[in-house]
Structures are given as structure tokens and as C-alpha cells.
Length: 255
Image 1: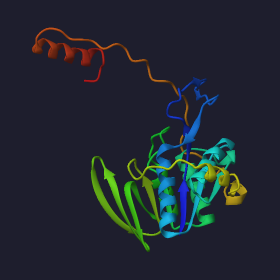
Image 2 (image 1 turned 180 degrees about the vertical axis):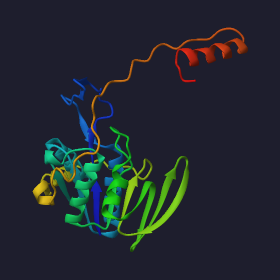
Image 3 (image 1 turned 90 degrees about the vertical axis):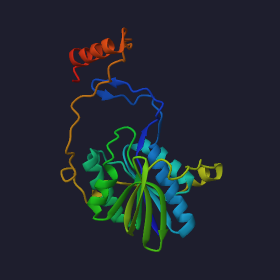
């Protein structure tokens, strides 16, 4: 079975965001595998252990992304692919186009990714990639079973479960609760240094910057305003209710 994991590198969730000249500063920040993508890596390795096959982890980004790919290799993935060509960097539209080109180049039976990236929260990556490849996709998986070419997925639907059955090839996005990602072992870390990591660019994938040009543009970024101290309303319930309505209408301007 050819198992592909799509992975994004994100800031550590404990990092403080600093914006300079409308851009998020990356100076000195710690970067990690997007937490939801960790579930995808773990599930891919479990599928390989159960059914055999090969796990390839792919990502789009600058050189620093290699550290996250090496972590996935240390967890048990077999090989990695990094598209580090700046002409192919862009928004979710661009990334889906590029990842589809990589997936078609290396081949796949099942593709697994996180249900969203914690930095953008867009949740577009998986569905867009499946659409580019013309395959079925099931999102927010909390349980995954593969029997031959049949795939059974239990997916989170806002506090309830939905069971979906489909067939390979398919793209699955992982929700928290799908598994408990393993920590890379010392032998795994040593082996990861020797596992293949291919770097691809536009020419390797038969793409041009114009063909995958981003459909959106970030014109500015700002931090949210600091929270102000709350207000305590006094008086009887009727007076508090009247004052609250006035505040919501005249100060907060939400009604």
C-alpha cells in the first residue's frame, strides 16, 4: 500500500506571535509539525504496520521544513519529499496544486493529512487536494479501518459520530482522537538521518508559477486588541438587563 502524508510545519503553539511591518516575524521562533498532521503521520505508520507498504511524507515550504519531515521519518515514515521552490509558495489553492503534482508523481493509494492547520484554521487543504486529484475524501476522522480496497471511517460531526464507507484511493483528514502520536525513539532518530528526502522544484513537477498563482493576497496583518477589564452590572435583574442591552447597542454595537 502506498500511503502519503501531507504535512505542514507551523509555529509551536506556545510561541508568541510578533508582527513587523504587517508580516509575522519568524526570528527565533520554534517550529513543529502541525499538531493535526501528527495524527496523520501516526495513522499512516499504523496502517503500514498492519497492512505493509510504504509511507511517504510530503510538504511545501522553505528549508526549515526539513526538520519536521525528519521528525516524521524518525517516527517511522520511510521517505520524504520537500517542495522548496519559492515560485510554488502561495495560498491553499497553490499548495493543493503543488501537492497534487507530487502525489501524481510518486503514486498513492491513500492520502492522510490533518483536518486543518493551527496557524490558518482554514481546513481547505484536504478537500482542495482531493478535488485536484479527483478522489473521494472524508474529513475529521477519529477512527480509520482499511480492508482490502474498502475504507471505513468514523468521523467527528460536532460531538456526534458519522460512519462513512468508501474505497481506495481516498484522502482522509485526521481529527484529534484518531490516535496518540508516538515519540521518535533514539534509534528512529538515527535512522531518519539516512532515510531519503527528495527536494523538488517547478521543473521536476512540470509546473509554472503562473499556473499555480495564489488566488488570495494578504494585504495586512494585525494582532487582536488587548482585552479590557470586564464590567460588573449592579441593581436588580430588570435594571441590569436594560443596561446590558444599552451597552451592547451603543458601545459594543453588536445589536
